[in-house]
Amino acid sequence: MKKTVLITGSSRGIGAETALKFADAGYNVVINYNNSENQALEVLSKVRSKNVSAIAIKSDVSKYSEAEFLVEKTISEFGKIDVLVNNAGIAGQKLFTDISEAEWQKMFEVNVQSMFNCSKFAAKNMIKNHSGKIINVSSMWGVCGASCEVHYSASKAAVIGFTKALAKELGPSGITVNCVAPGVIDTSMNSHLKREEIAELIDSTPLMRLGLPSDIANLIEFLASEKADFITGQIIGCNGGFSV
Image (spheres, rainbow, N blue to C red):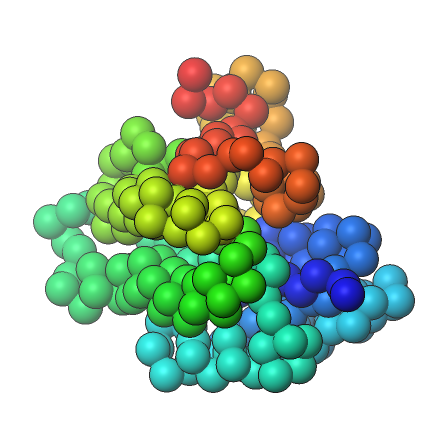
């Protein structure tokens, strides 16, 4: 029986690349999106072209009931969830004193609440099957913090704490929980950066380039594989040496 992966926020960027990577590995793929339907359908088409089963499901995973629907629809379609990739997220740059209460809450709803929601519902299925992999996407800023990104850094730090605690709790049930902490990746999330800002970031990276979505997708797929069966509770940086 083929394994099934559910990837939140997989209509573009890291999520889309991860969907393609798992398709190459022969997984059933569930693509999740909220607003970007056309992009999600493009990813779906590319995934299906690799001769694997795939569906795209619209769901705002920051909403408890919609996350429940997403997980239940996945199980109804494919029977189980073998891998959950909590990738849905937003970013933001702002002086701390200018961050509104609404902006703070929104950051945590998307970056943390969605992870809680999907993990809770998926874990029930994984515990039943005594197997599963949960992989959370944080950020190097969740490890070391970023000026003018306090709300983003704090939310991504929460992802890290969540990962470590859940790994301890679900380990006896045969489930691993790990976290990927990307550096600066060449995606639309960083498209607002000016050319000189990009140049400074590259200059600060020992490998002298921005990361690619495929760099993160490769790591996520590895953590989902049997090669990583004895790895859990880990925060693995993929940032070209930026945070060394």
